[in-house]
Each structure stands twice: as C-alpha cells, then as structure tokens.
Length: 441
Image (cartoon, rainbow, N blue to C red; front, top):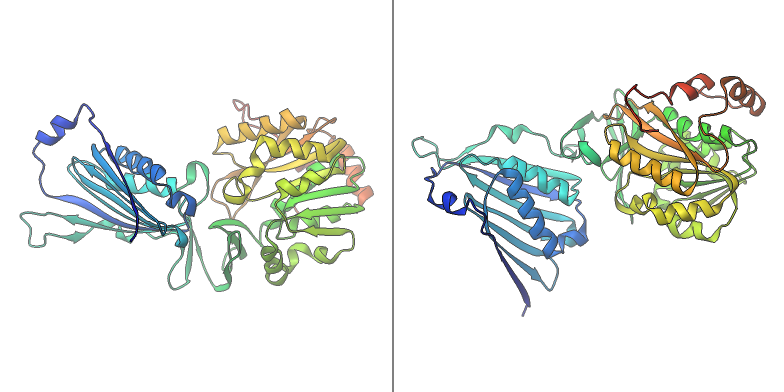
C-alpha cells in the first residue's frame, strides 16, 4: 500500500466573505499546461509547491480558500488550491522533470498570470499551454479554444523546424520568447548534467544551446570569447599560468592560447559537452583540446579549484548563467577559493549577465571586489542574444582593471602577436563606458 502524506492549509483573507457572496457567472478561462525540464527536487517538495500555488493564485488576482497536498512514497506530489474563483492544481513526476498544471478561474482573474508565475518558479525549460473559454451560457458552443493557443511553446517545435528560447534567468524569464528557424538539427542530447542542442540556422550559422539557453552562434562567438579573454590577459604583464572555469565549447581556450601561456588548466564538469563541441564545433577550440600545454579536468570546479594555492596568473570564469550546476560559481565561498588559487598579481575575468539585470550585476561586481580586488565591467553585444548589451567583469588583485592605455595595449598586442576580429585597444576602453546616470562600475 502506498503511504500518503496529507497537508491542508486554510486561508481566510479579508476578501473571502465578499468573494463568496458576489455573484459570478459560470464563464471562465481554463488553462492546461505541461512544464518540462523542471528541477526534480523542487517537484518532490510539497511545501515548496504549496507556496508556488499560493503565489500563482495571487498573481492571477484570485482568492485562496484552502490548499491540499499529497506526497507519494514513490515520488511525486499532487496539490490543489481551492479558489473562491475555482481552482489551481499541480501533479508532478520528478523523475521526468515534468509537472502538469490545471488553472481554472472565473470572473476578472487572469489565469495566464498564474501560468507565468508557475513557469518561472519551476524554472521550466519548456512549457506548452492550451487555453479554453468555458461556461458560455448563452452561446451555441459552451467551450471554445482561447486565442492564446497560437502562442509557441519553449524549446524545439515538434517538427524540429524552430527553436524557442525563453528559459533565460532574470527579468526576461517567461516574458520574452526568442525564436530561431532551423535549417538542420545537428545534435540533441541530454548529458549527465544538462541538455545540449546544436542546430544550423539561416541567419546565425551553427548555434549552441545548453539547458534551453543560447550560448552563441558561429557568426558571433568571436565577440564573446575575445571580450571575455583579452581584457584580463592583457591586464597581466606575463600570463603564463591560466585556469579556465567552464568553457567546454573551446572558444575561450582558443583565445587564451593566442597569448602563448606555458600552462592552461581547463575545468569543466561535463566531458560530454567538450566531446560534442570538438565534433560539431571544431573551429571553437581550433586544436586547443589537444595542445600539450592544456590539461582538461572534468570535475566540479568549485571543488577542483580547492587543490590549488597561488597557482595561476589569470582565471577566466566562462560558466553558464547562475542556475543549475553553475549556481555555486556565483557564491561567496567559490570566490574565496578562486582568490586563493590566484597568485599575488592575479587577474580574473567573469561571465556576468545582461544589462537588464542590474541588481545581479551589482551583486556579482561586489563579490569580485570583496574577494579579488578592483573590478570593472566590459559591455558587448551578441546578435544571437535577445538582451541587448551583455557584461563581463575583470578583477585584479593589484592593477586597476580599466588600464592599460590604448597605446600600451597596442604595444602588448603587437609583442604577443595576438590577432583579433572584434577586440581592439580602442574597443577595450569603449566597452567600459556607461550611460551618464549608471553606477554599475
């Protein structure tokens, strides 16, 4: 017999009496939503799901009367929020990363707001939604499909003709869809740590997507990789020992090797991504994976880096956004470990995020300043992103990172023989310029 846990929460907000006594017509909006690639632990957390339903009801403008939830021994939760305007229910399958949600509201509530709230809370990488209008008392058809059913879902279309990006963190999550027409699906696999998708697009060339988030395209990856590498590498007078955190596609490694370092340690948790990039995106590493100066380590960087003290001149943090396995790389504990791994003249480049997410950028900059030293941002624009300007930070233990001068950078570039397509000494300084009222750095 399956043991069942039972929870009931009752809510008595001031508006309950009026909600119960106000005449409401039967007509309402009914959403059926499938959420995929959600956090399995969250899907098995009864208390968290109860809170998610409560926030969803509030977002829709509905009144919660009570909530019941059940946790099953063989994993999975069913929870139902009884509303004055009808109900919201969720059924989860943690082992599949899936949640099925039913939202039905009458009156002036907006169930679509509940959907957006749940999608964001579950960090769903893909969602499919069907909307119905029900209870049309004086119409020939009591039930009709809502106009929003034309709304595309996240991820790959069923026929692999389009990819829809909507899982990015920050303000854009669930609020912006970014679509790519697909000429050819090159690679689609789930590794031990993340989903990996590679496809050819008519405008951008070959595109890499990890966990539903576009990383770059072959038409613009040089912008990303040159801007994350060269500001930090030129800031150090002799960058001989370099560590790369993440960077499994190989582009950062390619740019680091242009400076002719003696040793490069590259730590990436996911060997499968490196193998896929080597096969399907070979121009990124450009032979770097087999360079004798390069050591590849397939571990959690937060743990692997603990083995090193005063070992590196430059560190490049080229990880995914601050979600999933990369979240710990944006925490104070990791920055302390990183600082200890750098030598006394160490510099560091940090993949940060969109200019739209100002609070997160400020938090990241303060972490770098607290643990490493003076920190400045470098802006760039990636055509394959939909966030406008993007930001990398450079921090140094001893040098002001807005330096060197254009003249000094030109001299260093010539001496090291570093050829670039986007970065230049002038671009180096232009990328640091902020609008007059900004205080991001």
